[in-house]
Image (tube, rainbow, N blue to C red; front, side):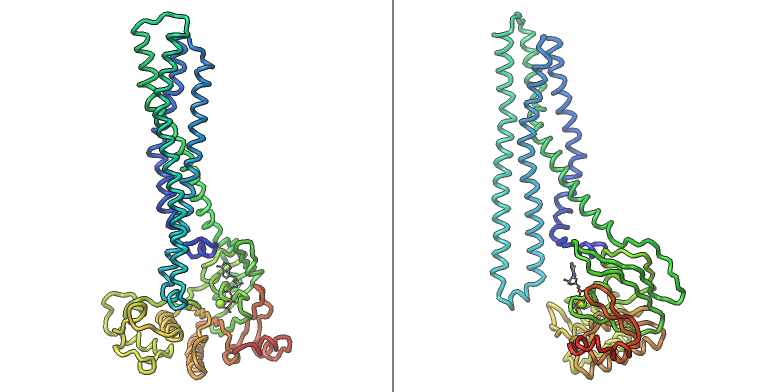
Length: 458
Ligand SMILES: Nc1ncnc2c1ncn2[C@@H]1O[C@H](COP(=O)(O)OP(=O)(O)OP(=O)(O)O)[C@@H](O)[C@H]1O
Ligand SMILES: [Mg+2]
């Protein structure tokens, strides 16, 4: 449920999947591998110069500088490697996002003849990923080669230094213990050093990406007080603001709704109607001083139909009892879904959606509405339920909504239909994210200021 507000922050599904599939392992691998790696790497690296100083009188600053130089060289290579790792995650997220969009919209893309273009976009991403992977492998191999050969070079240099340039005579035992120190003791740390740093950098970027993501979630629902100030209100909102990506989309919204009201929420296209109702059901990262609501039923402007039987689209119970069918039929008819007119031949068994009968926009809208009517709550929020129905169906649907109102529930109806307005006793007019009018519909309809807006309605 918490992913919804995040989609409003321009986070694609691909990015979420990539965080889960790549960043979580990167961040945890640090604990199980990098920490023990770190200890077995750093301890010998520090002990060796101390040992050489103690037993062979080698200058401590000289040997420590040598170790430091090795550490710097390896961290540069590791940093480069972790950039490739980072790019790998970003590119994978982009590609997964594209593939997800492609799968979800394949039918629409086919109709638009855009399949090839879309596939080319995915292939292009794949190509970028492959190039990045080649860089990653090449850099990794260079790192491995340097880290395994540096030990050999270091041994030769050490031996040469001590045997030819150091003015002390060495016994065989001295040379063997020297070889042991610079070969056996240092071989593992020097091999591990670049990968240790790579894991450190990688874990760091992953932690950062995960933290950014989790902080986003914390932005949602910043409500200062939940208490309602008026007991008769079933919805009470004070000073609600919504900002997404720096854009102020809803500004200082105050709405009170009591039981038994039928309210039209209207406004120009893009004025923020859907965002306001989505905020009411907690699906946006809004902030508010007061936010109180009773249980709400919500019909989205985008309709959701599964590839399943009509019955399963209406309720998700396995083997629901026969009397449930009666209830479903009743609510389908309330939503003006007519089996004969809508040409649904196998009744509730008819499979609809992707792999069955493909419903028209209006049919989907009415099935979605019927679903919401099954278990109605105190407040019924309907986002544009009339956009795809004819005038006579509209009339019947409004009659059904009025019945809800008469039962004491409240209906908040978003619409572009002029004919629906006289049926609502109250109008909330939203313009550019601000409520410009909230009051009786009669005064709104007679106000000449709103003439041009009203004339633009269907
Ligand atoms: N997820 C989002 N992220 C950023 N901006 C958004 C998002 N959803 C909507 N908007 C912007 O917010 C504004 C209001 O959108 P909204 O969907 O609420 O309009 P609306 O009044 O419902 O329009 P319509 O009558 O077409 O349904 C638009 O300018 C839109 O571009
Ligand atoms: Mg809308």
